[in-house]
Length: 226
Image (cartoon, rainbow, N blue to C red; front, side):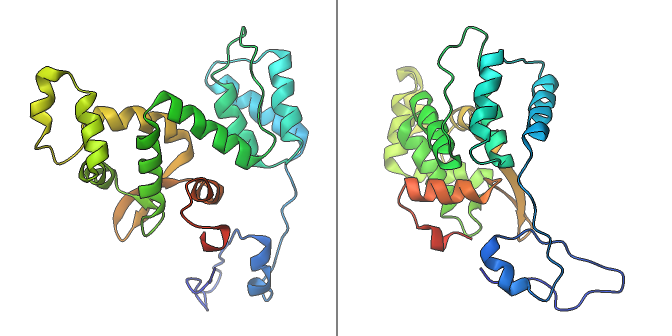
């Protein structure tokens, strides 16, 4: 967790703001440090309401209470974001709206649902390929190309295609965009685009996704996640 990328000197009137984990505080002890408080429940309620209003959705009183009560366990903004992404799909008649109490639990529950909706192997392969990338991400064309070189994935794509068109896919160099686009749309709220050596890559927007999913699929332990 080196901070070698921070410039040792700055131009006059310039400042750098760094968000860091508590264990990195010792490396920043010669700087001005501000400890961020947890997100107050009152603020969380207002943020949730604004998010729901922006997509013209509402929750029932019981559903709203479920989100806020579970938020109290962590008081973390990422938990509120994850809860909102689950809750926005609830209907007024939805009765099974229980949320996990931790960030790890709610991320794993989200991936469980993805694996039910899509091919479990495709979900795992896409996530693992992204996390194994140099910058914990890949360009979209890299995702499309690397999946086709996996013979099991290629076979699965061909088998899901109508028999009249299967021969057309034998020589393909990328998976059909339609297979990726459906999964991408479900993952999109938790993805971001970053620049890697001048190339835009797709990565998870928060380090806890890297940690939780790396652990889920046995890629690395927490000490290996930046």
